[in-house]
Length: 139
Image 1: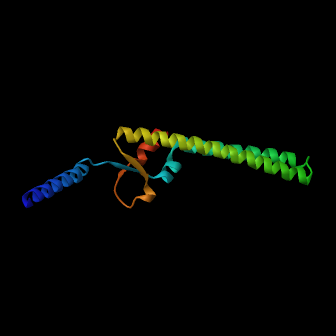
Image 2: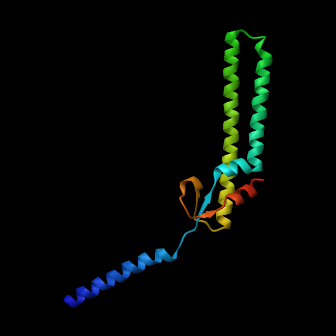
Image 3: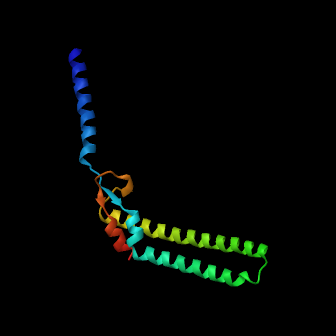
């Protein structure tokens, strides 16, 4: 009886160890991306930023032209309308940028067989830096 218990415990330990060890040999690769650098160095992101800046200038110039023809109350309402329009354009462009960046990250993760890609600001050390790859995809 004691021999059977010892064998069962030994068998159970072997099974538990083999399950634990199987996870160790199936290493997952983690990528990291410096989003701030992507935002600064990417051609497409810079195009979006330039487009937003130009839109803001146009809206401001148009508002300044209308200033003389509107009462103070109407001008204030018009300012709010213009601001709301600008915010909507900004959100639309940011959504487009996010979509492009996420698609680039998904492509790179697949190419490099990465199981996850994290923001570099959240990783103390380690991981495969894919920032340059993202910037290249967004040129």
